[in-house]
Structures are given as structure tokens and as C-alpha cells.
Image 1 (cartoon, helix red, strand yellow):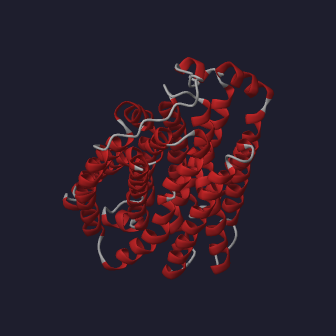
Image 2: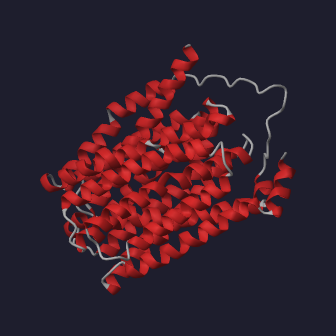
Image 3: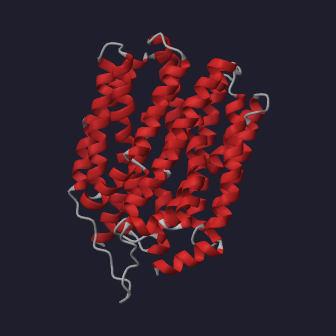
Length: 404
């Protein structure tokens, strides 16, 4: 019973970290235009900030995976909370210096997001659950981001109408630097339950990066995750400005973001449930097709119906790609390097995110719209869906046998 209570507490703590860490991106997204005006910069300059944030969170993901493997996922979350809180507090208090903003948000807060989200949560789930329950548990924890969209996105929009960005950044910083850091410190001191041995069979191990890099399946996963990151970043950085340019009302944006979160939550749980019952590579391909459909909807004239339909379709695809990529990765590579491999996949994911944030900003400044960027992203997600089907190729299965 004690072990079950510990597991529930740690799962709850992981969910809380995912839920509140969504503030790192949500606040920046909502205040994107205000920041550009406040610093007297163009959208491309703050598109660059968002791009650096996404790229750095990917670059540090292998390091975060190694920290989680070595010291434990909750200790890694604690580090992220302290550094993120310090970054946001300084941003709220310091004078308007663009390059200081790039450093604090683009570097420090980016590390914090990586340290509090998908990679350490994958390691936490791996330590707490057996193979059959990992996918659903990971979906449950990472749905913290979905609840963040449902609850926090309308809240940030309301704050944006009543408070300036410095005030909100300062309060967010104090929250992560103070009470949340204490809570994560208490959770980090709780030892993870010992995993029960699975019979007498030794754990499957890869153990070395050269073996991973010879696996064609790694590159298939990476290519798909590149498209995933590119499409996610466009939404994180440019969706609200796109909607504002199209004349979408604040209330419709808030309702759409909440609908986005509801569908994200449902699809995340559905992906975790389906992952242990059906071929994971086919499910992954299906989620990428949904993502492609969502991006195509952004090319249609913006109205109430298309705005809500887009939010529903994109939300339905949002976590499925992450959960299924995680399930394939954690099931394929052994305990010695799986955190680092998943971190490397997130690096590729965030390289796509960086490129997308930049393409959207520069495309808007030069063409006056996001249409060209959206078409490129629709193409990438379509290719990602097709490439995911190759995860069941003969070459991949033969390589899989070498790992057994």
C-alpha cells in the first residue's frame, strides 16, 4: 500500500509539473505582440526569441535525459523550477534589454521547460510502471499540458487584458522559485519504489550510442518528430497572432484554446490506451495525418466554425505523436541510454520547432501572412505520416532482432 501511495504522489507531482510548466510557453504566446511593441522590435525578432527557446530546449534534452537517468527525474524537475522561476522573475524586474531577454528566456527558461516536461516524465514512468502500463501512465502525466491549455490559456488571455507583461512574468517567476520549488524538493527526497523483477529474463539493453545510430528506425522516428516539433512550434508562437490578424475575437480564441486542451487530453489518454492494443507505428502515422489536416484548415478563411474545428483536430493530434514516439523509444532501447535517446529525439523535435518559429516570423514580415509557412508545415506533417509506416519495414524488424 505504501508503494502505491508513493507512486500516486509521484504521478501527481509529475502531472503538476507538466500543468504549470505550460506557463513558460503560454505567457510568451499571449504577450507576443505586446513584447514586440514594448521592446520596439518586429515580430521576426521575437519569433527569433521563441525559436531560440524551442531550439535550446531541444539541445539540452539529451543532458536532461542524462540527469534524469543519473539523479532521478524529480530532482531534474526541481532544478528546472528554480532556474525557470529565476529567469521569469528577472525578466519582470530588469530593464528592457532585448539580448538580455534572449538569454533569460531563450536559454535559461528553455532549459527549465526541458527539465520539467516530457523527457524526465518518460524516465519517471519507466521507473514506476511495468511495460504494459507505461504508455497510459505517460499519457496521464503529460495530459498536464492539456489541462494547462484548458484552464490556463483563457486565464493568460484575461491577464493580458488587465496586466502588463512585466507584472505577470514576475508573479510566474515567484511561483516557480518559491512554493513550487519547495514542493518538488520534498518530492525529490522520496525514493522511487524498487521495480519488481520481470521473472528471470534480463532487461533488454542497447547500452551504446553506436548501436542506436546504426538503427534505421531511429532516423524514421527522428524525421517524424521533426515534423511534429515544427507544427507544434507554429501553434505555440504564431497561432494567437494569426487569429488576431484574422479578426478572431478574444472570447473565441479562449474557447478554442480550451477546446484544444480538451481534445488534447482525450487524445492523449486514447493514445496511451491504444498503444498497448494496436500497432504503434500505424497509430503514429494516423496522428500525423490528423496534424496535416489541422494545418490545412488554417489555410481556410478564419471564422468561428473553422477556428473551433481547427482547435479540435489539432488538439486531437497534439499528444498522440509524443506519446507514441515515447512508447516506441522506451520499448526499443535499454535502460542504459533510453533517457538520452529520447532526449536526442526531442533535440530533433526542437530543431524543427526552431525552424518553424523562424519561418513563420520571417514569412510574415516579408509576405504579410502566414499562408506559405502553413503550407510547408502541412507538407512536412504529411511526409511524417507516410514515413512512420516504414517503422514496420523489413530492415527495421531485422535491426530490432539484433537488440533482443
